[in-house]
Image (cartoon, rainbow, N blue to C red; front, side):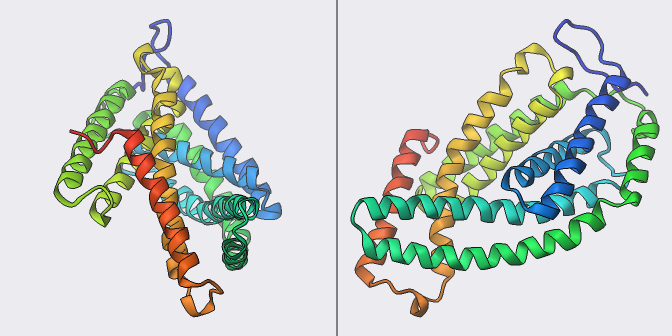
Length: 292
């Protein structure tokens, strides 16, 4: 089997080009991951996670039956990186809101957010301990051996012997995205845009946009020119939907905390919740996704 795709100038992409692209992603994943598990630098964690996602994206295309055995290793690594990265982003978001509350003279809300940040830092510390323990074990000599074997056997991985067409994969992902968008709109009409059903469907839609974005990025050299704008297009969509999802997560994060531990009156809590819901409504309206 020869794995091929169409490049900018219409030439066939040779398997060696795929191997170089894959090896670059794997190298970056290992380099950033090694530093992330030692120093917990937020950018190292972010880049290690991004490169793990790109690797997983291409593995789903090139090794869909996981003959290489790589997928579980990299997926687990992504999970541990994701726990710390999500905590980093959550803490940064609450810190920004706390500064805004202080500037607006909302002292009680600022104090409340300070307490929430302290709790999240404790949770992040536990996630960092797991990352430091688990990631080096996953990024082991065994993983390197599996990776080298994968690259060497790449032409034989597809038991059907058919060429891998990433352009077809992109078309299928676009169809899936549109189907999820229609499902989301249907649930909005049926239950309302601010219901759990609609929010869950919106999350699925964001994941579909993310998959399109990472496929367009990781396999850009092999895609038809008409797909070259897709990374930016779906990144914008993902970020737009992410802003809505983030606020939902902020609400859920605060609601998980025992209210008796929060030095926050009902009035302050209602104001905080109302502000977030107001922002969610504005973002939903701006997205126009709930429309027919």
